[in-house]
Length: 300
Ligand SMILES: NC(=O)c1ccc[n+]([C@@H]2O[C@H](COP(=O)([O-])OP(=O)(O)OC[C@H]3O[C@@H](n4cnc5c(N)ncnc54)[C@H](O)[C@@H]3O)[C@@H](O)[C@H]2O)c1
Image (cartoon, rainbow, N blue to C red):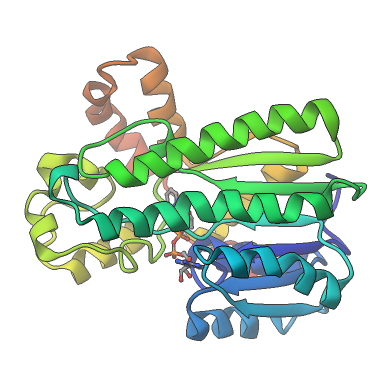
């Protein structure tokens, strides 16, 4: 895809993190933006940020787990913007507990948003996109769709599934509808609100290190707030991550890795498929040093 100018782009989870900056950079590149999020307040903040660009913007307070709302969205977008060219299925959540201790309600919460939300949105939008001259569906998985740590069973279940679903769909579209690009995004640590928005309790913190999911946070946070701050401050800036995603779409990369950490973790599972965790301590230093925590200069 050469340009986003005059395209119509739908972004889910647009109220925060990568979704917010995808919306901003798309608008900056001349795309109309349909910003969707379950959180009205943060969604409004994103819409406010989009005002300085000379593009048409609409917003929808929408829960991607609500199948009927997702099914109704494409027609609303077409009524307002005339077409759909790009869909970023970005909204996602996490929780942290060993599987045996996890409430079924929390399991379903993550599955419905991270997996069924992506699939239902893809199903709803494809019929409106296959005839567009240039179009793309961009599904966000994670590096945790490639490697696993303890304490993240449901997150892995969704992100490995998003990857499998998206890669198979990409092969199908390459055979039948080449104009519709399909991408899978694998971020490493990006400094967003995902931990702040997660369903965790203090109990989960005490055993976090033992579980291994602490590779992305400083050692031993004592409160959830400290953990959320540490995660936000330690990762790549989400504007930089959004820029990498959009470059990947322009270059038609099927797999889009974000950050050196993501690339090294993926490499580790190819070298040692059964014992890749043992390599991780050697990766920690380059992962920390090369993390780009500053926002994009062009956004200043
Ligand atoms: N931050 C990371 O390090 C990281 C790493 C790998 C993958 N990811 C993935 O990247 C994506 C974006 O996450 P982020 O890190 O920017 O997090 P974030 O929490 O900053 O943003 C996620 C947005 O999704 C919205 N959202 C949550 N549930 C929703 C629902 N049911 N319907 C609609 N919107 C909903 C939230 O309100 C929030 O605005 C997610 O899919 C996440 O799993 C993040």
